[in-house]
Length: 69
Image (cartoon, rainbow, N blue to C red; front, top):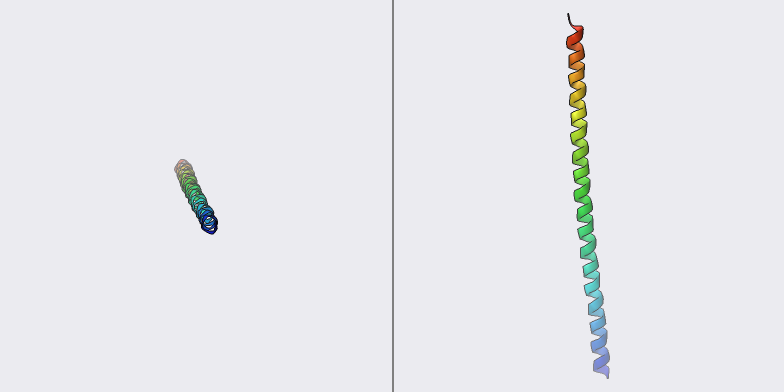
């Protein structure tokens, strides 16, 4: 009886460890996806800002050219 109880206790504790490891791995995968999505969003924002800056510089240059006789 004692051995059966010991085996059941070990099995239960092992199961908890596996579940914890699986949960941690899933959490890490989700965080990785969030980080990758954040980088994509940041890159897209940077690209849009650069485009807007270029358009402003072009307009400024065109206005300067139009003002020069």
